Image (cartoon, rainbow, N blue to C red; front, side, top):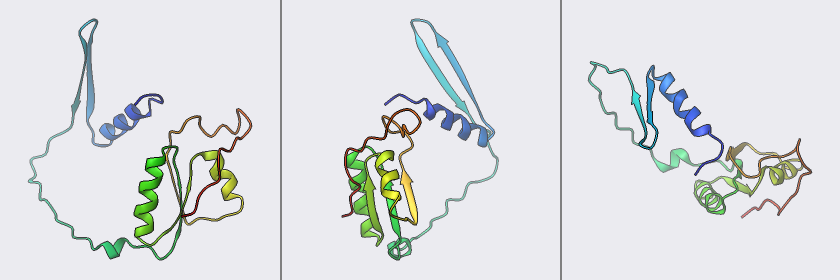
Length: 135
């Protein structure tokens, strides 16, 4: 998948956070090699096992809005969060979510940051393809 270029900026941020660096070698007609370098540590890494009871993740009926333009992602999020005890609403676009939020309040909003055609408020009139759904 391509488009926004945000992926590499996230990677660079992660590398910088870990005090590493990226080396890029590119040869015309041969390709590009990207190497990631991170500082090593002489400390022994201890694997910590954390046991979590699913009940610790369960919601107390908080309201969550999920915004994504991929129907399968909405379905997965809706099923998972509903099973955990949350009230879930789904919108297929930022435009739909803005309209929905004029009359609804949420405890949490989960949004896909890269959606076509984008939020578009400053660039074109808002078009709504459907209404946010509540299971």
